[in-house]
Amino acid sequence: MTIDLSKPEELKRLINRIAGDLQEAHGLKRLLSELSGSLDDSDPLFNSFPTYWTLCSLGLRDAYLLRLCRIFDQEKNSLSLRTLLLTIRDNFWMFEQAEFEERLKDNKFVKSLASIARVPTEKAISDDLDFASIKNPTVKRLVQWRNNIGAHLGAKAVLGRANVLEEDPFTAADIEELLEGARNVVNQYSNLFSASTFSMRFVGQDDFQSLLAIIRRGLNQYEREIDEEVESAELQ
Image (tube, one colour):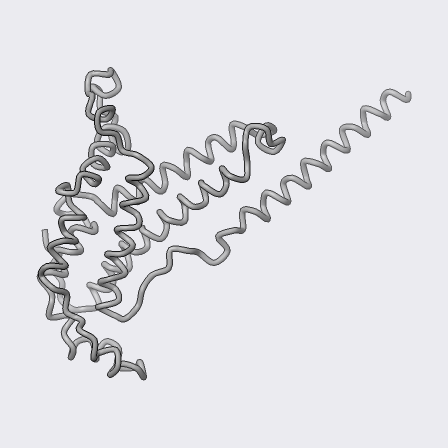
């Protein structure tokens, strides 16, 4: 379903909102991967707080999958990558040269930027719509996962009576495909619309390494204090 727009600024808000979910999904997934790589079952830091780290991992996983589900939502009244593309298809006039130049009138390079074709092609929008819909088998697997595990618990799936998730599972490779594909699509239309793209990397995304180092130092200090107390008690 096309989202009704009254001015180009509204399309920019829609693009920004989808891009925000996409950036957060990339960031959360990267944090989970790097955190998992920094802690393992033999790490004293993990072994000291196993429940905490396990629940953190589950929370990060659910958080990025929730955003991925929103991006590829098939509900006609929702803002999703699919409804964004349908809205762009019905508002090609917002990409025309005069509109582009008006939007970027304060950019000293606007004439050069406007010389590049900005209006999407019917072929490109059609291909991207296919990617964002359940015509794409990977999106279909995501929707099946969402409907049976992510947003709802399918009773038949819980009881082992629905084999679709086992026969056609949603995999880690599927997640990568959808995240990268969505990034390419969003940046393509953002670039056409406003000559700007979105980075999927955050400033300070490695802050957790400093946090782990601080916790390790605190844990080491705590263990030294315990050893000193034991040693003191033995001498008495």
